Amino acid sequence: MSKPLPPAGSGGRFVRLAETDRPALHLRIDGEPATALEGDTLLVALLTHGRRVRTSEFGDGSRAGFCLMGACQDCWVWDEAGQRLRACSTVITEGMTVRTTPPASLWPVTPDVAARERGEVLR
Amino acid sequence: MTAPRVVVVGAGPAGVRAAQALVEAGVRPIVIDEGRRDGGQIYRRQPDGFTRTHAMLYGSEAAKAQALHHGFDALREHIDYRPETLAWNVTAGQLHTVHASSGETATLDFDALIVCAGATDRLMPVPGWNLAGCYSLGAAQIALKAQACAIGSRVVFMGSGPLLYLVAAQYLKAGATVEAVLDTSPAMPTLTALRGLLHRPRLLLRGLALMASLRLGGVKLMHAVAPLRIDGTPGGGVSGVVVRDARGAERAFACDAVGMGWHLRAETQLADLARCEFAFEPVSRQWLPRIDVCGRSSTPGVYLAGDGARILGADGAEAAGRLAALAALHDLDHARGRNLFASEQPALTRTLATMNRFREGLARAFPWPHAQAAALPSDAVVCRCEAVTAGELRRSVFELGSQEVNRAKAFSRVGMGRCQGRYCGHAAAEIVAAAAGVPVELVGRLRGQAPIKPLMMSTQEHE
Image 1 (cartoon, chains in turn yellow, blue):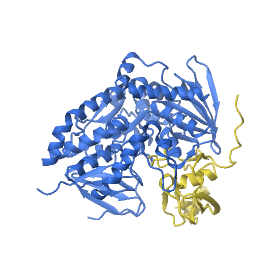
Image 2 (image 1 turned 60 degrees about the vertical axis):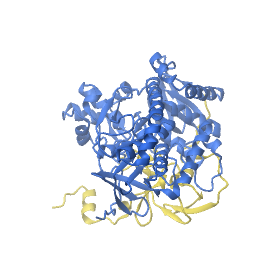
Image 3 (image 1 turned 45 degrees about the horizontal axis):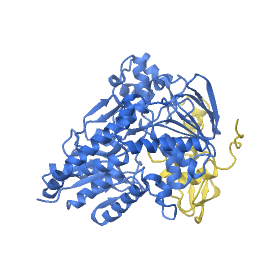
Image 4 (image 1 turned 90 degrees about the vertical axis):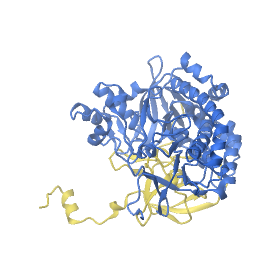
């Protein structure tokens, strides 16, 4: 009935249809270098590179934003300082660095957390 | 007397026309806009450096968009415009705002508050709608209009309402691949619906022309479908959509993105926090703030206009915004405002009455499929924010005795996540009502809570 889909993970989710004649800007997404265009939102920068914005903290997989108008809050990512950014309403700047995992996931594991992860109960 | 302190929330068609009326009367309003630029969602302006023309961006509405943008540009010196600013709370006579990037807060005293908060898509959960690649119809349109992107390489549009056809036609015209347009509404509107739609015959014809352009472009158009599921994997996202067609057969469409929405829902949180009375409107099956013909809410000094009060669309929002601003000045006993109000009020209310009949026609022609929402399978996610299933929501009714949505929210967390019930709230009410065996208006509505959108932990208000 229809053409096969491109395999998941290849290229970006969003497809640029016009306005591609803009200066390139450079950013780092989870440490990896990436290029986007001046005037792009962070969401577009993320989704022209990959197929997800973040991973749901409720175990149901990847998320890629939903409303693009600042209402659903599905596209939260973080800068290197741990400040939350709403990707759909953040305009990219040259040299921007972004993390798609919450800062807490990078915090050192304290003994109580380590114990809980081992299934022990601390008294 | 001292100049009245008037605050306008929103800079879409309603907010811009409200600000313009105030300036004409000699008042300098504060205009709070969550966007980076004026225009709202419908007439959203593309970023600097983008070169598409108004005609390419707004099609048949280009002249109106251009007039609104130019009108606003001419206002800039005469208003206190605060873009990228969220109005997050209303208390007695005060509006509380925060600037998005700087985090700077302000508490604004007002004599009149004109809330033009607009609308979002109205969503019905479909099994799999939490997969990456599912977007609201509004999102699909914003991606194209503001960023010149399609939400995927092969897109299915599903839902109902004028935006369904508009966005699909815009995608087709822009060169995107539209796999199908799947409408839950019947192909032929009822006579009552048609009578409503005939109040704006040109708009009706434009809608029919959009459908024709899609058919001409080879897009599969289906009516009276029942969405069954969105297929895909948690890691890879959407891979297809499955619906039951009007004859009862299952139809599958491969795609990597879905744009979905069932017309619009009003953004009413600020009205709620301002303690405006609400009423259930059977024709759209949503709770709306009570307003008089001029946009006065039940709270003195608080006025409501645009899609945040009634989904009249952009033209209606322009008229309602102007009328609400003039009514506010009239009520404040502002001399020039009173004169403008007296001369313009009759024609503006007539215009709005016509548009309201059209609105009711639309609501009937593209009905909210409430029975489908109520029948969402128990393992399907109803709250996208926190992946709470319909089964968990029903358990709050069956086992915990919730007969009211705020109670069901407290038990199930449906409506408590990041979006604060914007995208699950209407369906959740249908599910709770069906489970409790009562009409949906008896289970109430999710109350708006401050902050109406998440703030940063570092946000500090100064006294």
